[in-house]
Image (cartoon, rainbow, N blue to C red; front, top):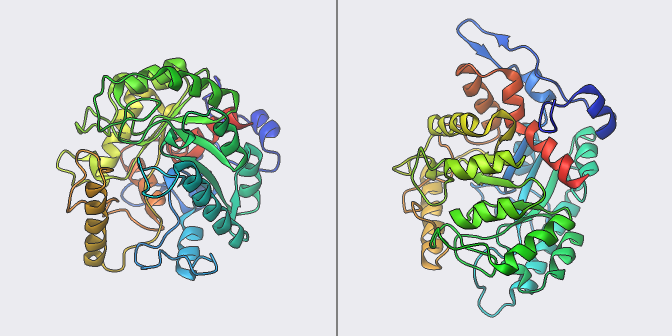
Length: 388
């Protein structure tokens, strides 16, 4: 088996003593079709390449004044079966009026540390791969922090090491616009990885930072993959071949990423459908296309969303429209991001979304071994390789 293949017993003994990860198992039979049993699902490592702890129904987001999560938020997270997720932190937008972007990012990082500390019975901060292993053993949710825009480092490469010491283990090179590193999805796809961008990639490799190329333009993406000595991730995106939006990745980008040993996470976002009205059928189609292009060892999920169910869809539509309009007004919105979108799959949303996706893939004939890889084991392998 190569390094991106399924974990063997000997590999587990070295990397995760005491952590019991299944190696597939049989599908439980029902009267009509094969389904993934709850028991099997609970034995898996489930990972979300980009998520957020919030209750979409709660005006406070489900976070109380003392940084404690509400009972609803805690219950839904624990019931989801999620073992680890990456939380966006730092300052993703081009400018925060009146603020220094480095200073703002440190402040936002501090807020996420407070949230994790206040809920330490449920959450644990990931500073190395061993923290992920221990969290699984302790039945806690491992939280790994990551930037969605590396403009936060300014022109100082030493900031990369500073942010790593503050818990940032993943750095996305660009957001939708252009920065000192390269071009994002909203600008010309011909913008290159800059000279400083090459230096930043080298520094991130030296610091064992996982480089994320979500939101990047095509040329910047391809050149960053080539420049990196380590595998990279495209943590939350879709396939351009199925929905022609700049936020989605071309087959060429996906192949180059997979050839480098990287990981592609399919998001639960409207960009999966040409009309921006995506549902789980689109999600499954993008996962299957990614498997065909990348191979099953290089595909994962990155929802770009939360984990609570929807109590009132009309209220959620209103709040989503307000957020979308705010993003459009400040220039952060991507092509295809428009009023009327829902930023989740309406037919698989909430605490059961990953389990429901597993069964949708099983219904399509995918084996439990493959499904386990997509839901988290591929990500587990990549994080072990980059962060050990």
